[in-house]
Length: 299
Image (cartoon, rainbow, N blue to C red; front, side):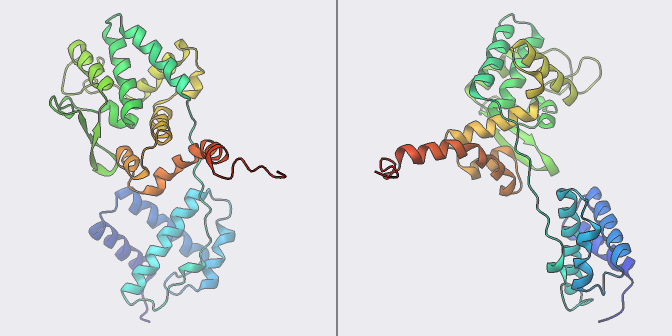
């Protein structure tokens, strides 16, 4: 194997990520730190052995699972790059510690709790006050379309086509997707467009500065609404309503791949977190509907 300077190899690898894979600046910076840190811990990565990589388990034992997973990913990709470039003729990355990533389960709102939010918001919007109409529209789009908070508050007026029931969303990583808008949400949008306060090209403009309302303001409005609806404000947030959208669609029989598209997840594994919500219902279904359900033990 040719002798290669580790720093040069790392920079060549990062340049490849940027040029060929379009890696984000933050990703490249994180990988640079991860590779440099691994090099400091076990020495030259271009000649590191499987045993060296095994020792990283002790070095990284206190890391959060997500941080460990990222570091291992950086090293796996780096060793693959070294092989492709003929710098190494082997790949020791299988010896890396195995991160046990476990996504936290999302907080859930029941159908009754969501109903309480909507009952309160609808009653308040009946007054015709622009702020109340806006809040109902925000709620409809969070729960009815599963938008992220940032996606929602940053919607442009031209994202709301007049002839089709879809929104054009600019999601994470600049990825665009079309999101269906329910009849209820369309009605709320129409009311809001007629009552809209503020100027500019944003659908939900801010009155204090040019631009749109902030995620923090959206969060505050939902917490206040939850209190008026008799719910624990700590249970309600834009993200929780997005979870409720996904959870309740799955309960209704939605396909996981369809849900992935609606939520704008790049990886189906991210969407699979929602499959846990049907656990109790599925057990009940098997117990009550399976052909052997009537044959109890001991009968």
